[in-house]
Amino acid sequence: MQRLIILRYSEIHLKGSNRGFFERHLYDNTIKAIGDITANLHKGGARYIVSDYNVNDEKKLIARLSKVFGFNWLSVALCVKNDVDEILDAVKTFNLSNCTFRVSTRRADKSFPIHSSELSAMAGEILLKNNPNLKVQLESFDKELKIDIREDGFTYIYLDSIKCVGGMPVGTAGKAICLLSGGIDSPVATYKIAKRGATVVGVHFHSYPYTSERAKQKVIDLAKILSQYCGKIKLHFVSFTKVQEEIHKKCNSKFMITIMRRIMMRVTEKLALKNKCKAIVTGESLGQVASQTMEGIMSSNAVVSMPVYRPLIGDDKNDIIDVAKKIGTFDTSILPYEDCCTVFLPKNPIIKPQLESVEAEEAKLDIQQLVDDCLSNYEIIDIEPNI
Image 1 (cartoon, rainbow, N blue to C red):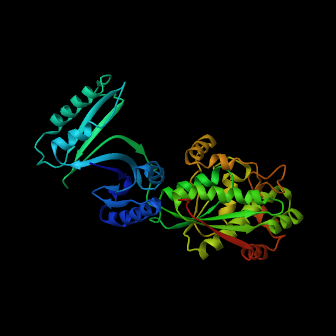
Image 2 (image 1 turned 180 degrees about the horizontal axis):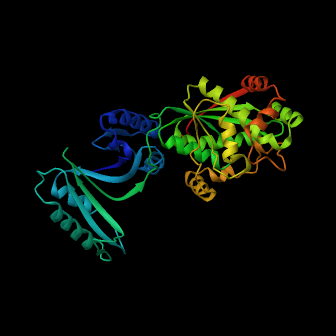
């Protein structure tokens, strides 16, 4: 009798002849998630099995594996041979109390001598005998013991399944560069694009000394949390101080945010091309703030030729907060350390900027020189998953 973890993948079964490509990435990502824990990983059908680990590492393994994009569910199971006595002996080790339950048996090995319903009844009888406060209930039950008799000669018996993050394996959908502001939205947008299989690169614009080192550390901490899902993140810190000072000095203040965004997009596209990224990702949600109107978004898009993805574009703020809490970024995002978007913030920013007016204001600046200055003054920090 062996204790192991069964992982069942999400959408990969829809991939037909391309399935192997996705499975290889999922395998590699799972190995990385296991990290320094001693364990074996092998694939069996549409599932991956982690075995030969120290039971003291089980909780840590579950925490890591449940964050691997591509898996839908995981279960801690007992593994025995396809033998009636061994299966029933394993059932005896499950303790249930004060609940309703049912037993479900799947007999993929059709040579197994007992039919599924009969074995379920035998297992249920054992559970009732050992746990007198149980009650059988085939519908709307509290617990379900599953017995999975496989063609490879082994049976897996498990009680609970843990929901994983789903999605597609990181590395299967190209590379994207994500603007990380340090707020609530951009980490969620980064999480969502990685969930669809993208490898993520990060860029953060700071305005030191107007913003503090704590603001920088906040973004690093957010990237560390995201790396538990996304894997290694190459994070660029770009100095934006001179850009903001020049805009503040020479342009109409109501265009401050709009022009800032456009210069950020230009710089980000250059970094994207340097890192072989195929898209830019932002945390914008339509109408959430003054710069996130259709006109504001169109103004930002106008200065780049690369696709810009906005995973949160139709989400309510409460929906975004719910995801941030779920993935663990919320508490860090709300720390009171300002990012560059709060520096020189105008009282009345333009809500529906017309492109001609924006371009007229930008003509007061040496845009190319400002972009070049940004690209000559940035730092790269490689964020590794903390495993």
